[in-house]
Image: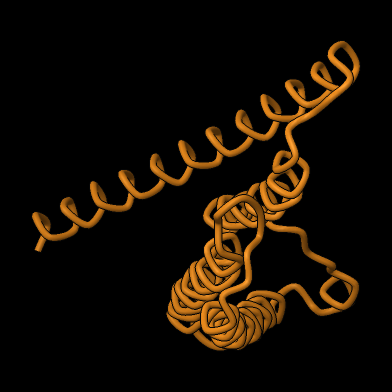
Length: 169
């Protein structure tokens, strides 16, 4: 049992490192292409035609990859308007409900994003150069599916902790 947990832990650490690496490469690429485009336009009077659409797509990819990392760290943007007014003993249970709801919404978005990407693939539209639009949009279902899985895991973990603690007094 401990060996399986260790193997799972190693796998998750590898996935986390890969995710961080992808985010770094995307951000560095975005910055590099933007600097190159600015240099070419200001000093040579011309730019590369496909860089601007690529930068727009990279902004989407960096944003969603960052959202996946924030979810992994349980450091995602949250609006806690109502939790401030809940009694402290009820807050952990409310957090379970919010995490489960968030997982459901993200799963729904992932499902519809996957349908959207499939439609884009069937249409054969081009994003820039020879890159099909569906390739550029793959981050949508992927990121929302990962976020849904992570919030599901958070809801399960927090639910176990909440119910293991016993009924609120």
